[in-house]
Length: 261
Image 1 (cartoon, helix red, strand yellow):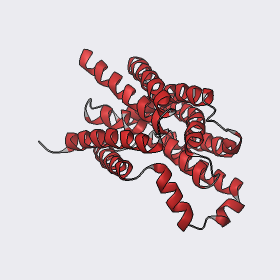
Image 2 (spheres, helix red, strand yellow; image 1 turned 180 degrees about the vertical axis):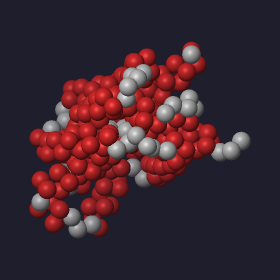
Image 3 (cartoon, rainbow, N blue to C red; image 1 turned 120 degrees about the vertical axis):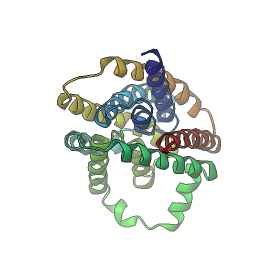
Image 4 (cartoon, rainbow, N blue to C red; image 1 turned 30 degrees about the vertical axis):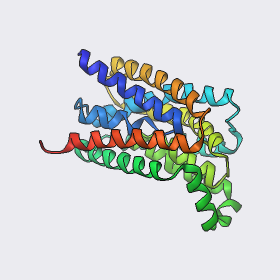
């Protein structure tokens, strides 16, 4: 029991850290760790990751707000449609296969880590803006934001991802926010998407794992508080390197857990 509690706690801290650093969802840490290391049911693991997102995102948003890095007005459409879609998505997630989810999560995290160590998010945004023609999308920002919010909310409910990175992409590419402001705004929106998905999850779930929720939530608060303070002080290059190294280590660990030995 003690070992299980420690694993859940450290998963929560890791989730809070990636949320505070770049607005990534707790799903990249909590869900694969609970499934692969502790053998949790995927549906339960997704619910716990969503609740952890609520705690971690709340602390992160407060820190970004104090540093003037939140602008909510442009993200309201995303938030509204994402919340509605998250409820629907949570009803569709009961049959997620643990082996597939755990293995794919590890590979995705590993690839994200390698990507971040090679080039910062700011550099990728500048390069994309120079080569891609998004004028048609930007002329219909409201429609594009609504569609993006619906997709993000569905992924939130089904896979337990609060949508932070996807919201970040929409805010930077479509609404043209600066990176730190986009991260701050995305974690604020993620509070509501994760909350709606989490509540819907545990309305369906008969047995609510209150102990695991509390432990992971505490870890998320600690990790998010420390990481968000750090993220608001460092350069984009340093931030991307730290995120990349963290993701490479975590992704490699999850992949190794799925190997047959």
